[in-house]
Amino acid sequence: MSTEDEFGKLETIAGSDCAFLGDLIICGVVLLDYDTMDVIEKTHVIRKISFPYIPTYLTFREGKPVVDALSGLKGKPDLLMVDGCGINHPRKAGLATHIGVVTDMPTIGIAKKVLCGMADRPETGETKPLLFQGQQVGWLLKTNKQSNPIVVAPGHRISLDTCLEITRKCLRGYKLPEPTRLAHMYVNEVKREMLKDEP
Image 1 (cartoon, helix red, strand yellow):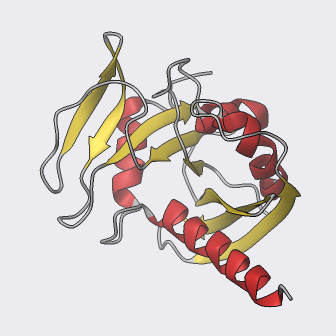
Image 2 (cartoon, rainbow, N blue to C red; image 1 turned 30 degrees about the vertical axis):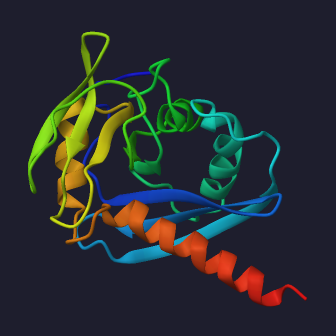
């Protein structure tokens, strides 16, 4: 696992997220043009859940399905934004770190709540460092007035400063940056279609 910037110019960025339906996990990946945030392609997989929900062990539940969904893309993203933790994790390796190491891809973790560590609460548009065991492991970023702050953290092959800079560039007025926001919408769309098809 590396928290150094190890990538060139970003042309594409992808976001991943998962939804659940009964004993199934739906993992989706949306590939975007980095400059415009236009969608290039989307892909998803549906798998049987093979691991129970245990906080801090999300990798064992979602890791392989996300990697499977990623492999369905025609183009490999220059960077992946994951709905989950990066190094802001009790073992310094959350879902985004795991996926980054397995795929050897730069990754950023975007989490909706603090899993470990402490940070001051930021005002709208502000960031505050997230500290755990005396080290900075991410940022608390308040993206808009209505929403709670999100947690932005390096996953793999990216630094603390750059993961924040990229996340800010991907914001379009919503709580979440576009890659994970669109991945979230996509997997829930797939889930709604599946519910429609149920007898």
